[in-house]
Image (cartoon, rainbow, N blue to C red; front, side, top):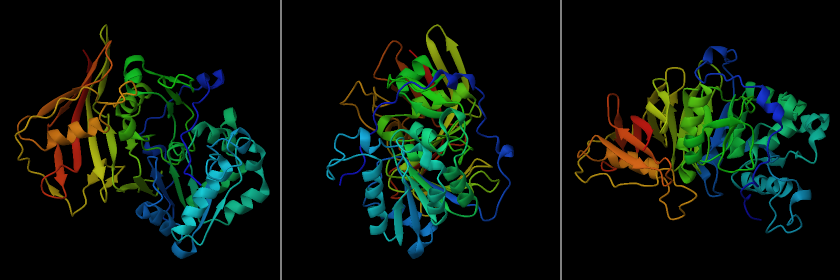
Length: 429
């Protein structure tokens, strides 16, 4: 059986979404639930979780009870069997049932005592209020939400436009508050978001045209859901597949448009682990081979001109395996095995003309945003570097600057690994 495939493009959200435009600032932790010493944890993966990633699967299982872990698999973001033309082929299927079986088998292989599919999808929405399914949820010690289209989770577990907890979601929320782990990959991580959950879009079109509430057939249009997802993580917006699809641009534009001052931008096959989410003791850590960017807009200012949109004084921190982050104090804590980097290189930063890895440029360099930032950190030849979008009309320039508060850390003494507080400015040309 193959791993779940990429989701079909979303359809336009009903116009009723537009009536709820209230945005909650991501730093408003004062509105978070009361602190609980036994509150559970989140393990949010930026997508493309490899079967061989024992580090992330092992962390989920450990937090669910180790050898006694019982993992409930929710794949309602996938298409149901009725919409999968390969539903009868175990080698080609990609629907809620076969994806649930796939993840259950992988979790058992990694050491979970049991892993069961929770039978929910858009063809069986009523099951989200089934007492039998609630009983199944109550027997689990942890949960994993698979990828697909996050609005299918809204449809199945939040009763669609009513945006209220089904019995099953209420049961999962209660388990989380009592210490359970809730994990998710791609759409399964996005749905953990609070208000203004991203629904789609590309960086260039987002910078050029701005964001709007809803889901759109146009895959490039930057959309968001004002009511948000499950609201498990409210201290910042969440975006996924960040490096692979160059989503830093859309994340910065959406945060600016909706009044948020922080984004957690998750890269593939890597997890953001959140302890005591929503409490005043919320702490985060990074686990995996890539990283998580924290985009800080507290001092950022956006401007509109005849030439286009611009953003000044955003901050970019890139945290890697073992690094920690205190959401309340905005404080990163670099893993002690990493040392401060003293740049020795004198080679200029390579010119990048596709900073967001445009879909219109299949030959572009993935991770160009991160690559430019790391190259700047590793050289003493310059204190700033500029990369541009592939698209023009306007062409956006992204300028990285090593200023006050910037620091870089290395694991091998030569290459920049973790970056802290690199200034980012975006402007049209």
